[in-house]
Image 1: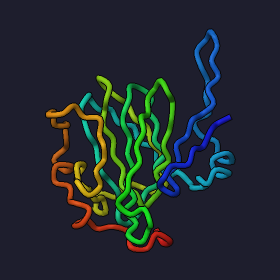
Image 2: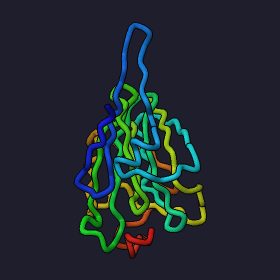
Image 3: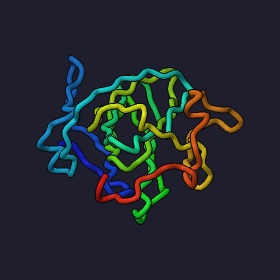
Length: 188
């Protein structure tokens, strides 16, 4: 049976699917509407995304201030360290983060609801990430918090002295204190 594991951040859920293996390979159910709804993930998914990144790439911390996206993230090749940050100003966990390793081998998934910034760091030679979203990509509303904001303090598994590979957008991310965030978590 698929396990839905609550994290220290309310609403962020780590998912460990049941994996059925035999001499042919394996089978798993990556999404089933009723089971996910029973676990509190009862959202309609409207878009599927697929990215490939090389070792040392760090993507994030991204979110959309309008048309916010909930994201169901999984890895089909390689491994990433995946992180979510609560950016709901009135939340008791505002500015806190959780993270875990998602990989093709462990098949874990992470549910990151709207109201959270999301990012990941590639720990394998390459990684392919699939994620479902609850709203459409809207570049005009996309915002970025800098990956190494000291007030958040994400413990990325980066080798000391090595700088991650970043996009220009991620290099220009804002500190949490200067970022546009969600003021009312009930109306995201």
